[in-house]
Length: 382
Ligand SMILES: Cc1cc2nc3c(=O)[nH]c(=O)nc-3n(C[C@H](O)[C@H](O)[C@H](O)COP(=O)(O)OP(=O)(O)OC[C@H]3O[C@@H](n4cnc5c(N)ncnc54)[C@H](O)[C@@H]3O)c2cc1C
Image 1 (cartoon, rainbow, N blue to C red):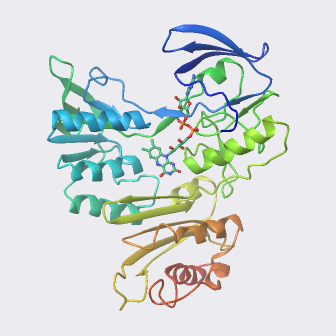
Image 2: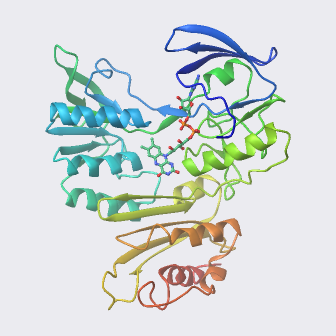
Image 3: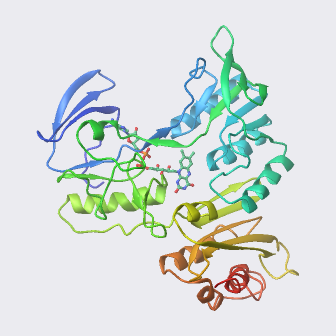
């Protein structure tokens, strides 16, 4: 549509940044060739983190990173009709997938190295998630480290052995986060940051003059901590891609940074977060205070009103909002965006408490849960 040549099934195997050319293999024809460029944008994304142990490449061991992975997993379930699934990891992909497995009638186990699911969130939110998955029949094994995989003659994993015991299974899903694909860039002399992802400036420029990067393979500036972070999310990748593209074409676009907003659902719960958790805020050097409240999503007499837990993390002295997290059965995912705006504007909880939010019984209580949390939080400043 836009006159762009797209070469699918071609893998770049080497970057020659002095000679301005790429080495490419045509995977269908197993043929190698070179492509030249004036400007290069590296958007190699990320790959699923895996546990590399004997058996971990078995036919019933999956990751979920792209659409083909999803098709493969679905085909396996359709054909082999597994009864049990073990998921390694408990981030949002694990939690979304445990719902899918339960929906397909599988007895589902999550083995996780920390004590609560969604380990990047604070415990007040993660405890609610844990209750939800357990109420829906998922077995959650905390503080669990995988030691080995027991396999059959065909190399399929029959059980996962761990320091918490042995878990029989018909299928394993590794959902333990992602690693940025930076090997080609690094070998060619492109600098990586402390996070292990490609270092970029606000114009998505790398340290090499005519080379840009965007998406899951590069870092983003976190506007609350002021630190570069690796935040592998689709909206960020898209925004960075536009900036990199415009600048590679001679423009002067800026990617201003992120506050780390995300939302996901797990069974009947909506979960959303923006900014820093208490733990991340402390690690970033803030003097952290927080406030947790529970309030209805809309006026209590309205059908469908559900309690929402709101946690606000803020700087003890200034009251500056540092982060917000919410969990509840409705009205969570979109509500978090108000706190994302507040973070971008460096607002204090006091200022948030004074905001004029829309009120009507089908949508919100007279005082929105965010306003109540901010009001309570503002009493702790000082
Ligand atoms: C199950 C799942 C659910 C998700 N849900 C959400 C969500 O709800 N919200 C959200 O914001 N984000 C979500 N994400 C994250 C989002 O998908 C990623 O952030 C986004 O796809 C990153 O885009 P990207 O272009 O940087 O990388 P990718 O989409 O990974 O694309 C990189 C591409 O580069 C190719 N490539 C790599 N190396 C080479 C090479 N040497 N030669 C040629 N090609 C190469 C790869 O094959 C790939 O096609 C989800 C991710 C997963 C896996």
